[in-house]
Image (cartoon, rainbow, N blue to C red; front, side, top):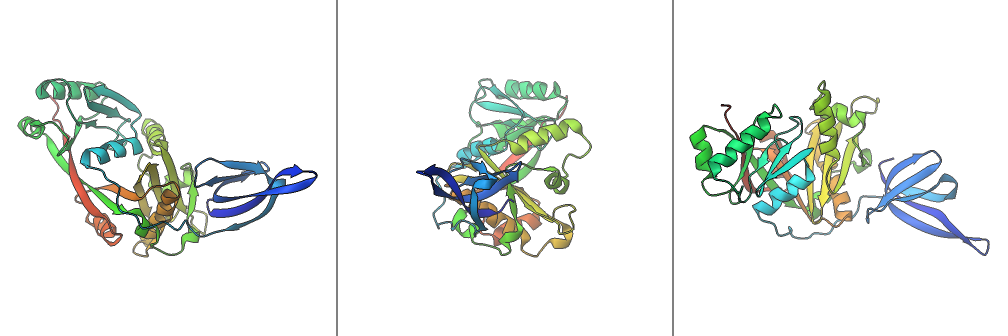
Length: 318
């Protein structure tokens, strides 16, 4: 389960003789007497267990070395928003207000790209009121270039606190070839209870847990990676992938403290990268807080470089 496999099945009978079909992809399920394999096309292949003729695990997809897709900072920010979609979204001119019961700043901030359709002071008042109505702090995602001229100065005038975040990119092909021990990694379309037990970002808050499930499973094509604990406990490592055309977003890459610095994070990302390449992606991106030196050092070793920096500015309460 969760491995890349090659299976042969009886597809039909012609003049009483079986006609075989092969499928290569992720074994997504094997229960209730049926199997489901998800090939590189993304469309599920489902058939009854008694039609299975043969099967075996196969190596990850051999991703080609292709250059990064073309994208400027605004493009990448919009792609990232689709890959981590907020539960609630509302337009303010060209800006997008986003709320998800407080689960992550990305899903609980206004994406200030383009013209809000109001003078900046009035737009920020509207932002503050929208988040106050949801009992949430008002965060503004500021991108340069991309956000309106004068926005930074207006936020500074209001005394907004600022936190920088790096957007880092890398070609997908070399990343897919990194690491070893790929057979330890399992892929799934859903984040089950064990995956969430390693993530542990929202434990104890039912509203945030519901929002987290919606955000994590949102996006054009989402996959979850798990390295199971041999003893059946909390997974040793996890990761999340969202594929959107030529771009693949990596997030929630987490490794148990006792297993860090063993290459496991690179292995998880390599398996996810190979899956993204199967779906036609050629570029990888991720977002990391500028003060997270440990994660930045890891991504440096994996070939990521900084595309641009954006900032979350928290509007002070009145």
